[in-house]
Image 1: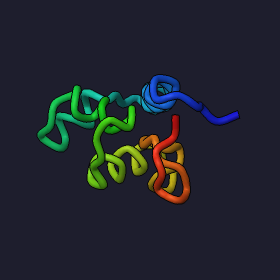
Image 2: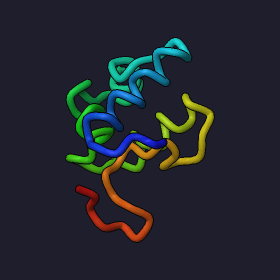
Image 3: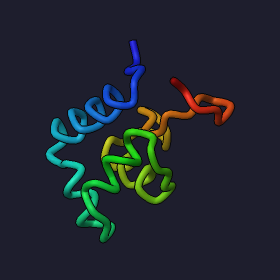
Length: 79
């Protein structure tokens, strides 16, 4: 079952990055943004195609899978 809440999604992405030897902080350093910004994107509080793309590359997954945003397939906010 995929993670449903903002926190669960962010923690899932953090876990998957750790399994691959990376972290939200490393993504932030690579892109020149703060860890907080990367975390907010993963939690759905901010959007950034660049951050999502970098995470997807590290996870060797299509952008948006696992979803770093809290938007559903139609682009509507999830609860």
